[in-house]
Image (tube, rainbow, N blue to C red):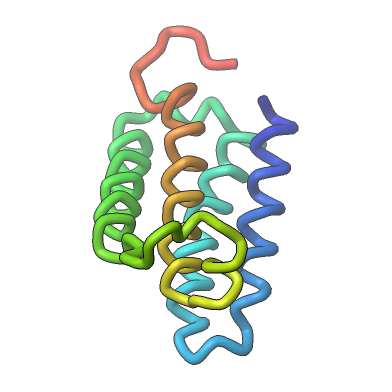
Length: 119
């Protein structure tokens, strides 16, 4: 799982890095940095998830990302096709938040509940 978390962290950092020329790039850099930090914690220090406050913060991050998915949901028909998301920024933003939520769900699946053995 550590390799998966590391790969997801790199992907999120890549997403954050390509936002440098976007008018609202700082906001999107923060949005993509959040799951990158969670992936780094899950890969490097999974034992920290034994603390309830960290798990609650992870759940809060997921809820915020799900709210973002609802807010930025692409209204363009067939937003998942390359000819749409390649040309329409709102479709890319909505899909980016879906990816953020999927990354956070991946971490929560392993670390989001109180378990006796942390590996």
